[in-house]
Amino acid sequence: MRTPGKPRSADPDRRTRSGSRRLLWSLVALMCALLTVVASACGAAPAPAAAHPTTAAGLPPGGVPGVPVPTVQWADAGDGYQEATVQVPYDYARPHGRTLGLHLVRLPAADPAHRIGTLFVNFGGPGAPAAGVVRAGGKNLLPAEVLARYDLVGVDPRGTGESRPVRCTGSTEELQSLPFATGQAFPTDSAEQVQAIVQATRFAGECRARNGDLLRAALGDPRINLLGFSYGTFLGQVLANTFPDRTGALVLDGVVDPAWASGTPGSIGWIRANGDIGSWETLQRFFLLCAQAGPQRCAFADDGDPEHTFAELAARLRSAPLEITLPGRAPRPLGYDDLIILSSVMLNSQEWPALGQFLHAAQAGDAQSVAQVLGQVLPPPTPEYNNYVDANAAIACGDTDNPRDPLRYGAVGHRRDATVAHYTGSMWAYRGLDCAPWLGRSTERYTGPWTAHTRTPVLLLATRYDPDTPYRNAVRVHELLPNSALLTVDGVGHAAELLTSSCATAATTHYLLTGATPPPGTVCDQDFTPFDQPAA
Image (cartoon, rainbow, N blue to C red; front, side):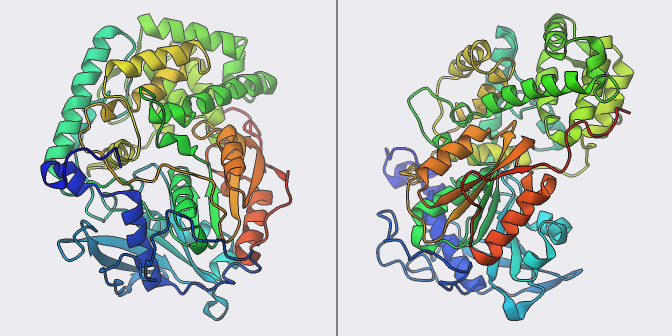
């Protein structure tokens, strides 16, 4: 998906990392084995749009020419769920070569007589599996009336979950020993920047050595009916613009700006996607609402003006980290980068009281209380290897343009810190550092245009203050997609509208069952505010 350079035989990464369009063809092929597409799948729909220029001419209903539609043999997975593994080609340029098993989990429609079709779910990341998440909580993901009429299907994209998971290091311990390469830390001085570059180079080299024949450019599962969260909204946009005449219901929650994929030379994917601005705007919202809530509901308000006190705490932790010990882990210093990363992790509304407690304890230098709060918020270490970081880097570095010069990331981050995204600019810029030494580049990815008129309307959901995919992203995508509707949730949190707003849930349910979108300008409230409950 990068600019083609070497011939296929001279570039193994080009051979092994086919692009978004081939992947989408394969997914359409798999889709055809799972559901029957009908024009009225979502109720009254606009007349079908003309074929988009990027739609493959003569593409058969099954997807890729020469690739048979896979047969899905479902087996009981317990508690009403079913699972299957579908064999697909490693390389769609060689459809009769090696195959790879994609793992799927399905929750069949409760009312099959009135079934609309299959609703695929992608939980974003990138790198999050879908099958296991659907199996664990699919019955609680959507209202019963939706689950009655749709089969809910999660597919582990290749490299994730149980679909041949990509693995870049030899052990969990080795993964944890590369904090700068895995997003556990970001450099705060020149010496740490050198360490970060070394770690990123090592991580990328190991990933290439272990998975050179597996990594792909666009991991994910965009389908005709898709519920996409976060990175899943980017896949939904690729689907909408590549196959606009094959779309059904597309619900995109926590919208990624498609500029993430490509931009001017020297620009960084995560910065183009405005994640740093979203984090900074949401952190400012936290400062304001914390002060308004007062110490009884936000502990950090007890330390004075939250924004001013945060600045003091950040400056102190730069020079004097706080030594903490989390349950089940070795003692470690809590420094400036930890403050920014952990604060950003807790910027979803449900965790704002915990964020207030964490900042209050850190400001007081109370290491024990800091560890106690973080022990409640952060997931405990697990003995099995978690490949989310590996898959995240593989997908992001294959999907997006990023600088080759590793020093560029710090320069961009520092400039953003000083201008539009105080504190959070460097964190988001360095998130892309693994891509500097990443040799695998995809040559056929979709990079636009993003303005296709889809056969059915696309529903975009966005909160006013989203720390990862800011509201401005959804506004831009709404402007780009002529047949789209934007539902605004007046609240905070990342891609959580269906969990935090019954108004948004009702509107989404109506769309999925009838195809009707909310009236222009619709705004929903969240069911609770971040500080509804007193601080513990």
